[in-house]
Each structure stands twice: as structure tokens, then as C-alpha cells.
Image (cartoon, rainbow, N blue to C red):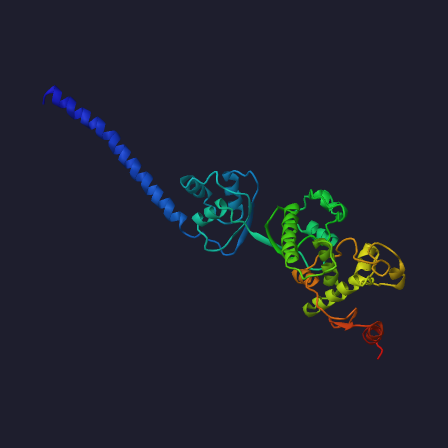
Length: 347
């Protein structure tokens, strides 16, 4: 063998070694890649649903530790490799997550990278006051009560809303079920309910009946709140609204017990007395003409509709029958008989 041939063979062998090593490395990498993919598509061994929380700013290492501590999977190194492989290391979103049996590692990564957090629900109830609503929201540990105070008097200022005539924003939040994720700010939740009420009220106001004794949609909201507190029976709403509208038109006092009770606030012990009815105040519709200065509760869509579409008739009085319905009368004499029958147990 010539020296030149020997050198050529040596060169070929030298070049072949890196190529072989590269091929082996590539095969190993591809094999690892395929193995990791198969693992990521295999459900984890989970028998019950698990809740866990990812705080804001958590690193993937911290997330992996939380997943391990929650008992979802111990293979957090593989999970981290898979997340890196899919480019999800920096894509994890904060929030509360619920993992159910049958989830795969890839499914878990999809969950926390897409922000598919647990959705909670809270109900704003028809007929409740803002004070009651705020107490409920403040006590709900799922929410971030970010208001500076739970006192309704300063609620408008808390939310940055100009409402000098109704600083508590009484009646301004639409009763409905609202969805949120854990840690949701109460101010944002109330903002949604406020916007919803504005939309419902403005739409209803645009389609209102003619010749109603209201100067604005807010007047209609006030009367709707009275209807809401006076009855829980849907069939009576428009009839009660009709009574109030006719009394307003005739300059008769509304004489609504719920307005007096609202004005008493925490001083009301469940027993409305003659002394309460005789004590003058802005919410005493026995002593003052017209509507009270603000709504007295959160009215439903049906009560708003009733206030803007009152039933035509001649009734000027009504009294509770004791079964949720009301007895309507056109004259005071008829009304007094109804009171004796349904309230005093007479004939």
C-alpha cells in the first residue's frame, strides 16, 4: 500500500467516526423524542379529581413541584422536558385548575397553557339590597374583595362612578348568575352587573308604554324595585305596577311598606309598627308623595318590564293574601274589607 492510499484510508475513517456518532446521537434523540411523545399521550394514574393553584409569576419548576405535591404525577422531569419540547415553558397561566382522571401529560400542559381555569359562579339575587350583596361578596373567599370598604354609602366612589343621588348604587346591579375564576376582583364583577343592568334598563325604556309618570329610566327602576319587594308572584307584577302608576298619576301617596322598611335599615327588627309608618323620612311613602329617592332593592327583568308596561285597570289598592298573591281593590272601602279578611282574620 502506498503512503498516499494509506493516508486516504485514514482520512476516510476519521471522517466516518463523527458521522457515525452523529447518526447514533440523532437516532437516540429521535428515539427519546418518540418515547417522550408516547409517554405524554398516556393517561396519568389518577383516581380522583384534583384541584391545584398556579400563582401569578410562578416558574415552570414551581408549577411542576405543585403538580407533584398535588399527587397528579411524579414524573415532573419528563413533564418539564415535554413542555420544553412543545415550547410551553413560558406559556403557563395563573389560576385554579381542576384535573380529572384520564388526563394525559399533554392534556395537563394544554390545560395550564390555555388558561382553562376552574369557573365559579355567584348569584346576584332579585330583591336583595346592595348592603346584603356586599356582605355576601366580602364573605366569599373565592373572590378578591378589592373595595376599600363594604359600606354601600361609598360604593359609587369605590367603583369610580358619578352617582350623587344614589351613592350606594342601590338597584343598579342586574340580578343574574355571574361566572368568574378564583381571585376575580369584586369591582370587576360589580362592573359587569352594572353594565348589564344599564343595557337591560335602556332597552326596556326604549320600548316602554306611553304616558307613564316617569321623568327618566331611573324613575322606572325605582318603581320596579317596589314591585320586586311587594310580590314574588309573576302574575301580580304588572297589576301592582298599575296600582302604583295610577296612584302617582293621581298624586296619591304610594303607601308601600317595603319603602319604610328600607328606610329603617338595620333598625328594622322584622316588626313594622304604626310608629314606623308615622315617622317621616325620605323613604316613607306613607308621609311623602311620589317615588322614594332611590330604588330599595335589585329589581328583576320581569319587575322592570312590569314598571314600564303596567296593567291597565282601576285598582288603587292591594293587600297580601298570605299565599304570595295579592287582593286588588278599586275603592278604600273594598280595600279595608280585604285588609280585615286577609290581614286581620275577619270576614
